[in-house]
Image 1 (cartoon, rainbow, N blue to C red):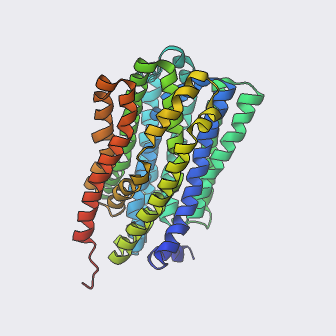
Image 2: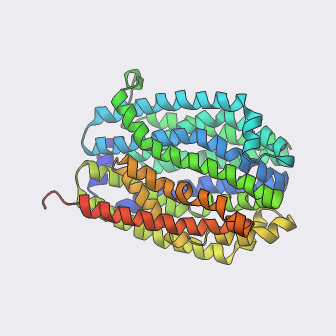
Length: 450
């Protein structure tokens, strides 16, 4: 039965299959994003607006280390999807075992370094002035749980590669709900402040990992590995890292973006501007959940059918995913253009932030309707195992366009130059991705019988 589940990726109608994959992924991302959103609202209202900025300083560091797990997960899951499509189950098992070993070794090493140099790292990511102390409290506690989060993020992509999107959704929902419950207990009831917020987050990662372990040791999974599969295999490690490097590079660029944005905005507008960016960042995580869900649902379908050489299904999957994602992105755009003031007031009643953040948010989301082409296009190359174009297109928005823009435009337009960098980089990255995607489809997605 489990084997039939993965084989469905190559037989069911594409629209039905994409919805089947994307809806649980979207719900999982929604719940996870709501967790981050509500967590920020709790912190802002129960601790203070400076605490929002403090968490914004810590997130790029902790999420970069955790993103090693996601990178290894997505890189390995691309191999697993194609291996299952080609009926090579031993390679799928070996790949999963190597993913576990790589995730543990790399994240534990980075967490050790992160704790040894905590003060310098916090300050370099914008933890200055009144932001430093709450940021340090949050940072030191959360970092202990980051290896657990990395394992969860890695395993979640593997569950989806097996064709089990509902269980992947549960793995995202369980820690999110538990985190909110513990937030209420530790922050509101027990008045633990930033330490309470940090422990709620860390313990939720442990609960998530417990669920994932249950999934793989039960009869729910077809990937039953043993200790022999944990030994590193160089060809598999090389393929995992080449494909996973795309995801890791994206998160590295995100972390560098936070570094630049927090420092530039602190110099231009102080703690108020950093808090405004933190709120916009939370909305980026939350509001884009349906588009990201379609992207996550697209990956295993495209990878499986590419491995099975069903190129007509790959092309249909690509076109359907872009269409669905573009419609959803447009709906997100409309809501955020109409209600930015109401959204801001959910996070804080600070008058300075409330007067500034809505206009900033509008600029951040100004080009949202076209972002589907960029996200799906970059994901396509990752799904089919082409690491170099996947890497370049993934980095195009933030690495090649956004970071240079925020370093240049503020010299001429001040803080306004920071905010208009968002839509400009979105437009440029989408144009570049559309060009290369169109060229790839015309050249290589040719049915076998042609």
